[in-house]
Amino acid sequence: MSVILPTYNEKDSIRSVVERFFATGLADEVIVVNNNAAPGTSEEVAGTGAREIFETRQGYGWACRRGLAEATGDILVLCEPDDTFEPNDLKKLLVYSEDFPYVLGTRTTKEFIWNGANMGHFLRWGNWAVAKQVEVLFNSSILTDVGCTFRAIHRESYLRVRDAFAIGDSHFGPHLTLLMILAGVPFTEISVHYRPRIGESMVTGSLPKAVKLGLRMISMISQTRVTSWLGLIDASRLIPYPEPIPRERAEAFQV
Image 1 (cartoon, rainbow, N blue to C red):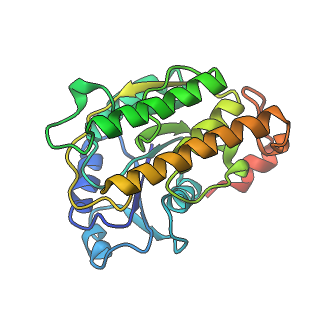
Image 2 (image 1 turned 180 degrees about the horizontal axis):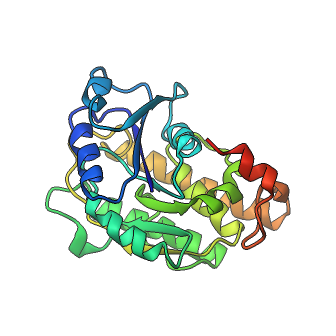
Image 3 (image 1 turned 45 degrees about the vertical axis):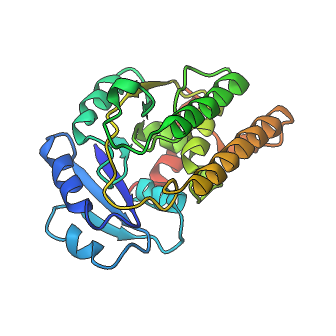
């Protein structure tokens, strides 16, 4: 299992998060993707056992894409190092990944939202509403959170969609889910703990930023649905589930 942590403004929490992921005994490697991160981040990562790599193209999506490409595990886990997620929830992801090659976390279950977490009524119901847009337009499995980073992906499923990645910004998460749906990859969603963040979020730290991101997600989801209906998505970039992965494509992504 490879845990991938894209970082920009998490200097004060990243050391603790890395150590706690390793303490679960489930993470074989932790990859920190330094995305032009705050000064001092590298010093915090040093000595934790994590492997730090650098992605200079600014954006959450670019950092995730770089981390996925560098990871060596059979199960690839995306998370954030801002202390909002509970590393012990890896156990849930691992259990469900035995049956599903793509397992998403959801932060909208009321009982799992900690006091002080940045998941008020607007963000909670906004994430739920946009997730339902995906569920309805794509006739997918149940979705209740469109913006949760914490998720587990079988390497084989990653290879099915990797060539179709087209987004490098903050709405990469739902983009990845839509590609999985279009490829027919089975998935499910599980509740994960959501805690107060250490430091300020560059994306949802203010209402205008959150609204802007939500509108980008809605536009991207609608556009993806229309282009897929019109047959404008290059199907050769996706490998339908459970069609075998061509050997040359699998070998091209071996680290």
